[in-house]
Image 1: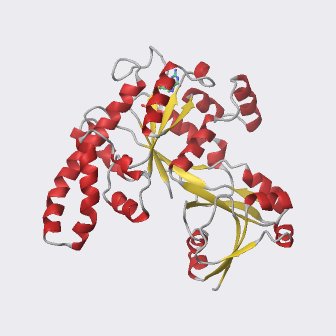
Image 2: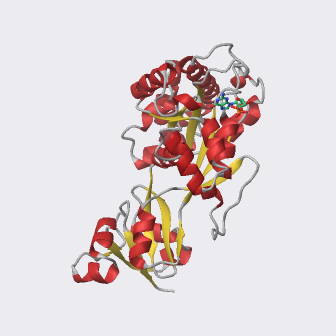
Image 3: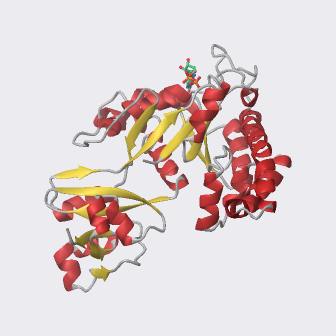
Length: 366
Ligand code: GDP
């Protein structure tokens, strides 16, 4: 599955947030057979109001959301790249994720020690990023010597990856994260970049953890983070981990009342999960019938046979065609039969690139 790693300095609220994520009712939604929750990895349901609308039209008995994973990656301190704290363990864990959720402390509380002795989230972000860049720089400098040699000897693999390595190295030597290469990157180059297994090539999302009273409005710290994120082209989510921990314990009705009182429209976790989904560049397609309406996750750009393969490998192997109805047509026309009559049920083949919100029915040989 797709994984977001939660990182940040100690005492910024990572565990509080992670526990809220995995305790929330949505994380434990019934009738999902593959819900494994390891100590520091939790699968959460991706909230998507479209499921309810489709289920109403299809008269489905059940709604099964799609899921993504969050991993609580503890142990980052200044000096982690040199093996301080849980340094090596930390670096190994973070290599396994697809995207990074970077939690920043934006709340004042004299009772909770800040490792640097002051609240300054922008400077904290730089501390963490510096550790990640140092680790990448060290690992690339070590590996590139060999690759350059092999490239001189016309080794094919070395010739393929060397240009990307050189580009990444140049960025790191200039104090910049490798993720700057992600913008407009081709699928082939992305595969090469991901193969380099660097820490700063993961896309990043900043989470500002604020006091309860600042949850609806943010504060000076969150505005400073937003400015920094904007310069990087990154997204920011303002959340109060304390509120989320509380909400995760409540029934839906109680939670709504509590959030209303706080001036919030929905749990911050819902915003966080959706932002994580966007960060991973994932989209959702649906299957719908009387038994269930179900959401499925695919990377943007996935073609119909591979999309079918997410349901079952047989669907991909024996793929013939996909009947496809756009979400809006499905809901406004009132379902499959009506969409067919209106000429809005398309018959798509192997080259069709599945679009976000497509309601799909696969035809396949067994
Ligand atoms: P981690 O080290 O980043 O995982 O941080 P924790 O989640 O363990 O939180 C460290 C301490 O800060 C705990 O005592 C939390 O209860 C507290 N804390 C976390 N979030 C908030 C918050 O939004 N407001 C306040 N006042 N305290 C918080």
